[in-house]
Image (cartoon, rainbow, N blue to C red):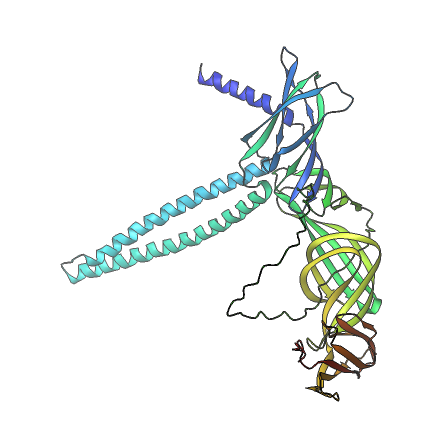
Length: 518
């Protein structure tokens, strides 16, 4: 068999294998944060043999998970799929991907040429440096040799500096092009071919199929601005989308999902409830006490209402939420930003202070919305009245929540101890006592009246024999097992005080741990 004839057969086989994939079109993509579910349709013209078995093939991108492939035929047809065989094949690049590879190849060749020139200059430089050891017969010969060495060393060194600068530029261009190629087509050099065997098929088969795809995803980006004078919070949400299949998606139905559905579908087994005698504890001779962490400012949580953006429709699935943003073009490579929604949320603003932790007062917005929402975690830019506060992670769930927008230097709340003493005051002196007195002072140096929420830890008795008596002026608006809460109005350029007295009484022989306020 001649080489020319063999090459012809290979070409015919190649065209036969990939003829059915030419008409495949991406119809719908559901993007998860780091993956996607892709639905394509294909119009195939299978090749049939004498036994009425017909064959055709479809192609999946290199980042596709072939095990996730699901093929669906029209319900009304008589065609059936008898078998699907999957195998890895060399990828076929689109025109722009091939062009990127050509540019990278050319730059690599240019770099090799520069490197060869650099090596040649190194040899020349070493030669002239060796001539410094050459012996000359006369002073004139020495002067001529010295001048020649100087000229050529300078020339070689100058050439090396020029080539080094050119190589640095080439390396930068190579890095940029390689990054662009990886973003557009990924790093895998093989794609997937699914060879389908049909029975009862006609000349043309229209089928749809879907599969899981890596190398793509989306990232939520938020802008949250507090507008206290208007009693609202401005919220805008954009999504940054990307895909690296190497093929531009044209007018594809794009859906955004909050998270990939969990792989684990079965609930875990219930643990056994075993009650038995506790073994005798073994104590170490030395023990390092671990200090308790101080109370921390509660994390920002918020809820968002349903979307009012006509182009975006939200639907809630069993394990995740999904937004339909319509038909969009999504080219391979660089990410694209799309607006999801823009809303104004009604908010109640006040300042929050915890003087036991510090004198700062935090701007707090309390949000209450009409409907619950599920907005995924992402980076948010926080502002107040146009001033940028910075970026931090943000997620929303439910129908109410709290947001913080930094501190005000014009508002301060301090706590000062007036009295802290212990003693025995009963007649029979069989009790021990402890007295705490402290004053909370809130100052408003701004030119506006403010509403201030003050929170202080409340003592918690862990023994029925411990008795606590409280005297507070004004009395807390709220009191639970862990904290006191006051909500006070502080006029502009004025201050407000709160006095606290707490008395403790316990058996004299009880060894008490008085906690952090000793």
